[in-house]
Length: 254
Ligand code: G
Ligand code: G
Ligand code: MN
Ligand code: NA
Image (cartoon, rainbow, N blue to C red; front, top):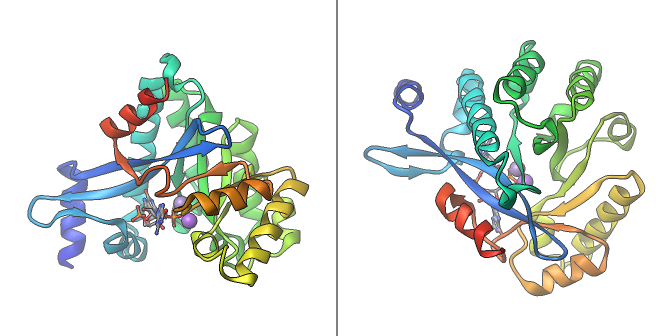
């Protein structure tokens, strides 16, 4: 299709860019960023991922695109490696299901880490619950292999899927990301409030960090913090930023 041809050209001509959305701790310090892809299209301008990631997943183009994203993230971590401003900053990268299911995913990931000489714990891979539904053995094996090298894992959009607690227990997850649909009405909807409290408690009791995404108001943050949530991401702090603006955001803190 036209989109396929354009996406291949985009890879070749380096039209993809990464934006960085700050993630903060309770003290308001930047502790990382979620990496979010955009397509700088010569005619259409900046194209958001929802207009091409789904298609790329269907056609398999997500494999080379996902590789490019990981390469860029590792390159950036390498650049920040000896900069004291970035001492505590890691990058969270969204990984598609069929990308993680590739046989070569683990060796390729370990190669990238070694080639760039970065600390593996700076890298957090964001997986979604859809991945958990099938072939748990393969999933656990791959996650453990990477976790053994220090790579971190988070479960994205948590609460919207159907993963069972017995599955969760088997996975080496560091972080649960509470889906922003629950955060948006946490102060006005009793079931969202219950879900948010439950997810925070679940994370705590399983030894996982809980991060709230889509935090837009101070009142939401206060509620989350008073219920034990320790990390935050959302427009209240910053939208996803081009690299230079993210660097300025980090520099302002010091
Ligand atoms: O950045 P934005 O808020 O528009 O992101 C929309 C969606 O696109 C998010 O759900 C996110 O998971 C997905 N997305 C963004 N960047 C990437 C990426 O590099 N790889 C994959 N697989 N998905 C991404
Ligand atoms: O699905 P995933 O969580 O990977 O995607 C993150 C998406 O959420 C990105 O599209 C990002 O732009 C968006 N996002 C980040 N913070 C906020 C926020 O505070 N409010 C809203 N509505 N969207 C947000
Ligand atoms: Mn995400
Ligand atoms: Na999410």
